[in-house]
Image (cartoon, rainbow, N blue to C red; front, side, top):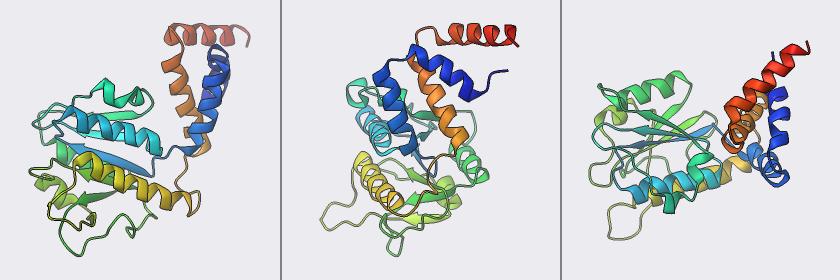
Length: 227
């Protein structure tokens, strides 16, 4: 049976040299040490801007909670970034916020609730030794009680003006840029392990190659026939 590495090597021959070079350059900069949770974001512009920011800063996973509002993206804003990130949607009949929080905590993440309350951590000093899931809610109501109650840490973004909050996409951008810059200058513990790196490049190749599923099936049959 083909391993992910063997399958990627074969499938990558159907990917352009330029695209393969991009995979080789970008994949090592991806991380799952940091992830983003978006709860009931209803404005397509904001929803799309966060996805684009995650792609540009190397955050691979985005968790989408849809309790009241459907998550809609604007392709003119994402500019294709949704193709290269992994979005995990929570839109069942129960409390999707609680389901998401439980899933992430079981996976080893600390839930970080963004809040304007004083005494919280900021993006500049929040501990980065454990995987972090930064949660962002709507501008009007903020995060739901389920996420606030399950939060392991609280974080605020400093403000020095009259307005009481940043736009949601701006909040995410400030947080992720600051945290990722700190991680990149503080060691390699945030990087993907070798097996996840190959799996990520394979997933990108599958999204790039025309009729990848059929081609992959053929490659597996050919490999099995020569064993």
